[in-house]
Length: 349
Image (tube, rainbow, N blue to C red):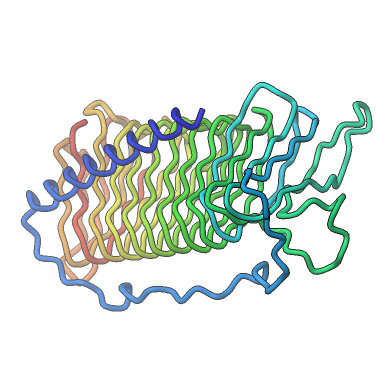
C-alpha cells in the first residue's frame, strides 16, 4: 500500500512540473508585461494553534516500534493529532485499526463511542500513549516520531490535526486534515475532503465528494476529481501559490489565489457554475473546442485571449479594469474569470 502511495507522489510531481511548463509557455506567448500588486505578496503570519500546548510526552523507550491494534466498526471515525513525523494512513479490508510509531511516542486508543448494534467502537482516538497504562493527567495525546503508519477500514472517516508533518492518506472514505506546516497528499478518497495546510502544498488525485482545499503558502494540485453526491462543491484557495486542476467533474467550482496562477484542463458541465479568480497571476483554461459556456471576464494589467471564437462578444471601454462578456457554443455553463494583474487565456484542449 505504501509503495502505491509513493507511486502517486511521483505522478503528482510529474503533473506539477508539466503544468508549470505549460503555464510559463502560455504566459510567454501572451507577451504581456505584468505590473505586480505589492499588497498581495505579503505572507500571512500563522497564529499558534491552541492544540499545541506543552504537555508531557510519553516516549517509547523500546528499540522496537510502538504498535497497537483494535477491532472497530467498518464505518469507524478515527481522530488523532500529530506533533511531528511523516504520517501515512492507508485503507485496508480489515475492520481493524492498527497504529505504528517508529522512534517516537508510545501509541494507544481511546474509545469515544460504540455502535449500539455491534458494540464495536465507531469513534476512536489514536493517542501518543496507552491510556490503559498511563493514567496520570497531562500526558500528551499527540503522536510524534519518525514514521507514523495507521491502517484503517476502507470506509473510515479520518480527522487529523498536525503541527509539522508530511501527511499521506489513501483509499479511505472521508478526510478532514489540517497541518500547521507540511504537504498533504490524498488519493482515492471516496466521500469528500477538507484539507488545510498553512505552509505546504495540497495534492489530491482520483477522489470523489465535496472538496475544500486551502493553503496559506503553497500550491494546490488536483486531478481526476468527481462528485459522490448531486450538489457536491469543489473549492480551492491559496494565499500565495499556484492552483493546477485537471479533469474536475464537480458542477460548481470556486477557485482562487491571492498571488499565483490558475490552470484548468477539462470540460465544463451543462448548467455548471465556475468561478476562477486571482489578484496577481494568469488564468489558463484548456477546454474542448465544442465547449458550451457563457463567459464573464474582468482583468486589470493584462489581456484576454481565446483560441476558441467567442460569440456575442461585448467589451467595456478601456480603463484600469477591463470587462468583457461572450459565449462559446450554446452557453450552457456559466464561467466567471477575474484577475487584477495577469492574462486570461482560453486554449483548445
